[in-house]
Length: 181
Length: 191
Image (tube, rainbow over all chains, first blue to last red; front, side):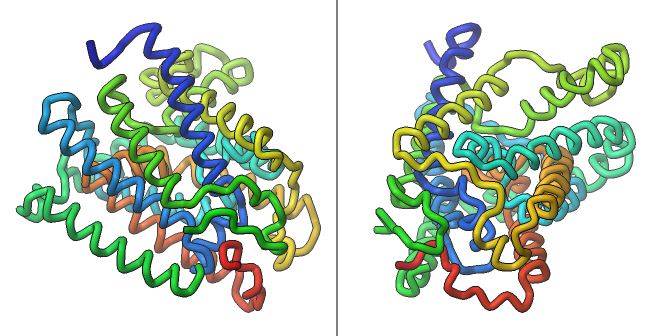
């Protein structure tokens, strides 16, 4: 019966998106101060949310794929494009005070500057579309590793890496909670 | 843990706050559900890229958009990703209204402390930041959601590369932007 496709999936998209937006708002990552203060190391809300989501989500998906109930959706690692793109993204995220998802969610919480930044996002997308031919030829084609994962690259089982992630996360959480960050 | 943090300097809007760990578990469990039920990992910016094509279409002409190398394979339509994005908006709206934290905000307090109360200044920087975030996300193939969470939870190289580089780049930007700012009390999380 799964995965569901067609019109039922479109209805579910709204439901799942709704849950995502609800969670972002309750986690207060729709708040400019919370996001910018993560990059200033004064509030670790963003890292707590993301690390927990990655670990809980990752272990669940690993189990589900082993049971044959889910498939992996690993994307190509075009290293040069990913690195340059992420570097530009980091600057943009701090100037904007949101990432694209939390920005859209923040508009819904009354943030006017999030709405202005969303107009900027449209411009950014247009600029990307217009430069896409060049980017594809000169950037995305360099350093292509394919659909590769860290366990494949490092020749260790996925479980080992998830275990290491749990240890790192717990140490980090302990450290920041002691400092009430 | 972390529940009901309220602080005067956070600029309000903190009521109804859930623990970040609970929210992280929620997003993790949501990932299980979407992987199994619709086989479509959480992502945001693909849909925004499509919508951008629809928005500029009347200005630059439908023909230009239809023949553009990017929009040709990313045309605007009410597909799964676009409806997920719409759902995200309404989920945040419902949550903010039901927790009575909906509030019109033009200048956040951390920004105001450093850069003053000029709306124009804040809006210009937000606009530029939004454009850069979107451009970078498209080049990297995803944003904090699609790369940072959905790819990283699969231990994909693309996801972790994105997370680490984005975080370092953001921290350097924040250090430059807020250099000399002594607003230590603007910790938005501590009691």
